[in-house]
Length: 582
Image 1 (cartoon, helix red, strand yellow):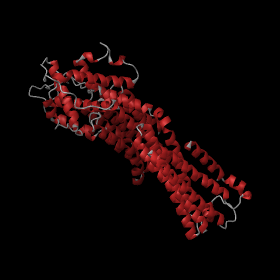
Image 2 (cartoon, helix red, strand yellow):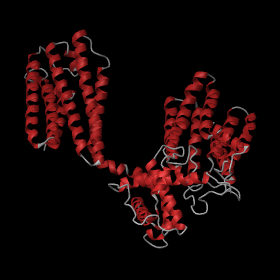
Image 3 (cartoon, one colour):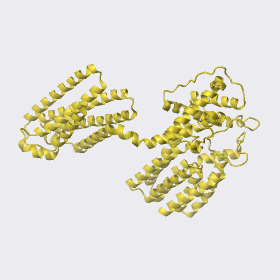
Image 4 (cartoon, one colour):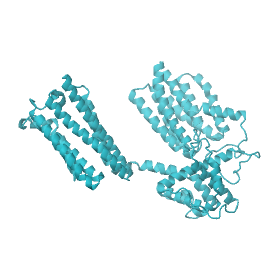
């Protein structure tokens, strides 16, 4: 009831204070601006009804009546004072710009301060009551919507302050503020828009977020795969149907993720007799270059040791298995915990492979496969990493880091911007715009994900970890391209951004199935761009593409085929499209 009354009051109020209504009712008003008083009064009544609704929702039953009576008293006192002030004001007629025309009169100044002060006070009360209700609600989209409504109420407070400030300035100086009308209009529009969006968000929010929820579930499903596959291989009975492959499961990713979590939990329960707590305690100090997660590292170390013991046919390590230390409250919390464990498990296996003994074999290579790691090293000896780094290994690592894609994409726009503008200022302004949106911002996301263990290193060596970095690249590059169009950038920069974004889409589509080399693709495309932009002499940089490709194979992050295809795609898509556009 309160909500319906508030909506009706707002609608009638907006109709009454419209300029056409004010002109129509001016001849029959008992005193000038009486229609404005009625419209403003209805707006205050609407705020009172909303306050009543929130009070019934948030406050204890014993406090509701007292709070409503207090608000009603404040409302009636404000309305009475506003009526007296406006009725006694010597105003000749109604004016659409009420504050600028009449705020020099003390009666009108008091009226405006009372009205705007009540509106700002009511909005502040809304923010407080909504904050209390958010703490009580357990519905995520309702909480998000109410937070947006709070922000809208904050804009309402700012509107009230702006109106009061404008009225005081007119009263003191006799001149209106030139910015008052656009500022007030923008603040009121922001308030109304945010309140409308937040009020309806619980309805449309879940529908709009479905694609993001699918991506989040899909990402979790892929992250859990190494741990699940290791448990499935060791304990096949955890799967629901014997011989069922991963691709035979239903398309509903939420159902598949829940099933995967359950099967992992079943596998861990069956593996419990083989788990030795001492192996987990020994693994806690390790960090492997990531953000410390000692609990997940200990759990992963125990699982890996227990799997090796079970495969080797060893006797159970404990007579009475201990209950799981981590008890999740719901499926989401369980999934989040197992994701941490799966990342730590994968890092544990990779670190074991890096610690090679004198015999040249990893201590886990005979019993523990590195599951889910998409490196595809070239050559018959790929399974046996070298015991120590040689000079070519160090050189390959240096080339990989110094001529990484983000470095090339950082420098290339500056070179193109210099050719387009022939001025240091233009080079810095336009070049940095492309560099920041296409290199620095996406690289920040990649480094964050590498440090938190969401993918393998800042070069994203695992193919299944490249989805989020590619999405970040696409979003950031698209924003940069839009800015180039809006700001009227030189066409060379716009063409470069279009070609890089197109190349990103093509390589992303390929890497979804096969781990193409981004190092080779970016380097080859950059050579073509420089040769087209400046002079054919730039083709002399082509050996750098070969050096980069060699380094990627040498550090065992790609095969020869992957770097060759990457170089071809980079030159054919990115370079050729740029040449065609200019």
